[in-house]
Length: 159
Image 1 (cartoon, rainbow, N blue to C red):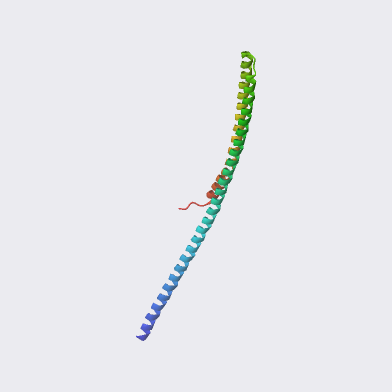
Image 2 (image 1 turned 135 degrees about the horizontal axis):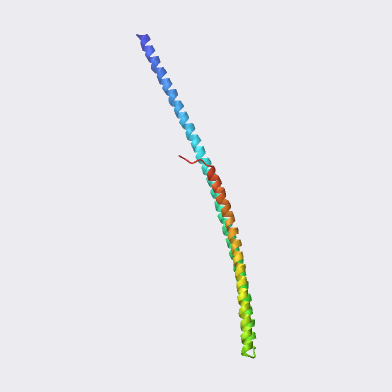
């Protein structure tokens, strides 16, 4: 009978040892899977951080381009305004010196024509500047959109 008890005890101990081994194997496999998943999440987070930093840098560059363009446009408008005022003053002085109505009308007609031509030319310059600034401001944003699409298109879609 003691042989039977010893055999049963051995069987139970073997079963417990096997179960313990299986449980340790499962725990180890779960730990490995958790560590692998954590590493992938952290890697994805790092990549997202780098991507976001690049996007912020692009917005800063774009904003800087817009600010410089606005400053340049402001200077251009101020210079045009100053020149226009000087022309207006000189025209007013010339108008005060006219002898006849015909001379007044011709002088005013010439002033109006040159003022209009200058306004059209200045408008064209401002339009060119606006297009240049818009292109400069959009360049870093466009590059970041392309880079982001490229990075995100390489990532597998989570199911």
